[in-house]
Length: 113
Length: 110
Image (tube, rainbow over all chains, first blue to last red; front, side, top):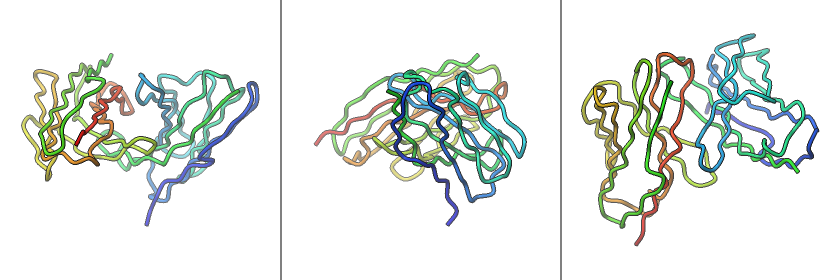
């Protein structure tokens, strides 16, 4: 079965370190998204991509970057982790950009000490 | 811009009916999603409304009024497993990705 997987599922890191969260989907979806979820804020969009070599900033993109070198993967990098980036991160993909249902990964819980 | 309002928490009794409301403002509208999210898990798709009216899917129904910027999710015959957060997500044609409300945490009690 096609799926979307995230790794690691849990990570603890220190302030200032670079961290990369992986996201891999096997649906061959062009559209991939990264959200973070915090209490009281719901899901907030960090970055998204509509195809290989395409990346776009979301509403909370500062301190994060993504790259899209193939259809299957959209890794999220925290260049210099900050305590404010402690959160649960969800990757998602969809078939159609404007009407397609989002399929979410299981989430990655990141703690920055 | 886009504003999405949902109640933060609701409590209901097993076997009862509960209605979770969502009001929104978008620069352009192209449908509304409802997602369910159990604690510690990923959101999963429940429904998508693009036209006005009620869409029924088993115990769950979703209603949309585009002119009022209003939607609700109706859960019937509540079960304990329905305890979860419910996320409203209107699709704004002025945005290139889906934006979610903060979600409504529903607690079903025996």
